[in-house]
Length: 465
Ligand SMILES: *Cc1c(COP(=O)(O)O)cnc(C)c1O
Image 1 (tube, rainbow, N blue to C red):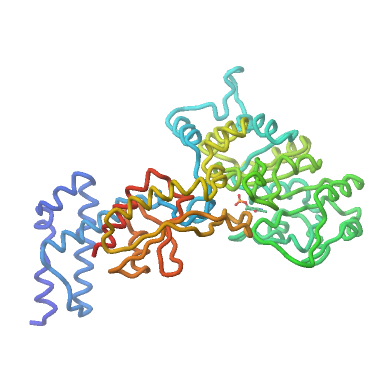
Image 2 (image 1 turned 180 degrees about the horizontal axis):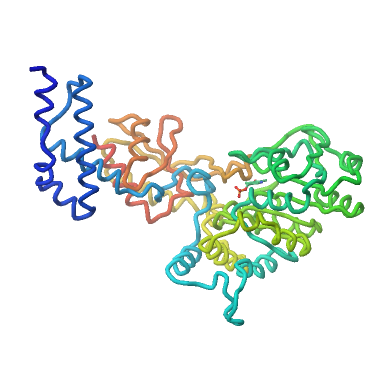
């Protein structure tokens, strides 16, 4: 008899495994069929290992039960779930961009649990519009005439061009033909929308006369795109929004601005320069402007289009609006977030993105000291220190601004940094941290204090061995 078949016979039977106390207990938390599936998959895995000649297959009941429980855990854990962001990047696109405020979360829960007024007008007892819920708030905060919200800003730009520029020439500076990430590239969006791209200027310099000379009877609009995720230094010139608006209006052409970031507060107040805000841009008289809900605004994923009523009305009639429609949970979160902006001081206190942007080394130091004190109380298997590093806003926003931050830097003694980084990612509540200069960094700017004790316990467990 071959070694293989004698090993194969040692694999316990499913029915016997089902009677194991370790697995019987697990069954209380999941359905029998899921447990059965986990046992089958584990046993199949063992069989494959044996057949492929692996010599280190452990067939004792305890380790098989442990493998089944591991498999069961993977099956029953949500794929989309919370993580701790210790990177210091406030708008981390991979980690869900803006963290929502408590008010926004409450609004989502209450609208999700019950029937609601999504498209119902309570005063009239008749059909209402989903766009009404945020329209007055947005126009009040931004000073715009009208507004329309869609799924995200990429959809907003598509809808704007499709409505205002289909079959017409749209003049764009070569310095602003940007790629935002994924498949969002201005030239591609333009062709998808049916607009005809007219490039003017060069990569580094575009002049007023370039736009002016490109205007023909076929021109439908002038488009400005905020180069939100990169910066050109040196021999550089662009035409200001004010000048573009003046030129456009002299020729009875609408001016469109894809602003991207969409700050509703003065970022200068937070030490962040070079990032235009929505309110100042509206003052230029720009006809249509769009921005994201989950970047600098700190709300849910959304595309917010503001500007002249006649264009917004035309967009509402475009069939794409139905395809790009915003859902009720997003609207609830957006309305709650915007309500906080009615009083800018409330906004800074209650919207996590603004709170984190406003934090300075001075205000973060006591927070850093708390995490440091927890970890530095009888450290076993690691050394730790409190220091400073630079973080970023992220989300393709304000790329050149490195914001100084407070970090706890940890050096494990018995395990490698790469292993620790992986184990932190695989923890029950994953911790996403960064390795720099042979240490694991935990930037307290983006960590919520309620997670400090969990981070402390997890690190102690992982560094002990
Ligand atoms: C981020 C960005 C977009 C895309 O916005 P989403 O909300 O991510 O779809 C479009 N244009 C600019 C300039 C941006 O910065």
